[in-house]
Image (cartoon, rainbow, N blue to C red):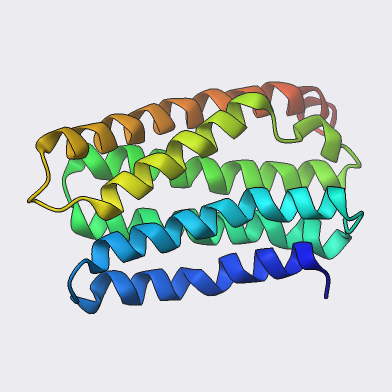
Length: 184
């Protein structure tokens, strides 16, 4: 097992740990869960860096990395939806999760048609991921003792992430449209 895949495995292993820590109820459990989520998020960058730097790219790593990303993000969004059950939070969360499922399926379909590169991760997708991770960190760490500014910032970032999700999904769909239309 190479270093890049180890970083990805760590991200996957942190998923249930974050949930358990968040719900454990010990002092500052929310902050600890947010720190663990931050570490898990950083492994997303680290595994790619290590794979390129150490020439450790592999088909398995290319498969596992986006799966680990989806597990981490969907777990956190579902956890946050339970904490913030308002329609004002659930709707952007549903948009984000729906986009993740749609784009994953689109990438899989494009790969089956030897067109994987047409839907490679783009700049807006990377910005979306960064905004999404920051929003999740802020909302996981937030406690009612903190100023409302933090909660409002977390909500604003989730809305921005939902908008970027739609934008990036549209970009991927536009890139895939010629292949989609030719297969009808």
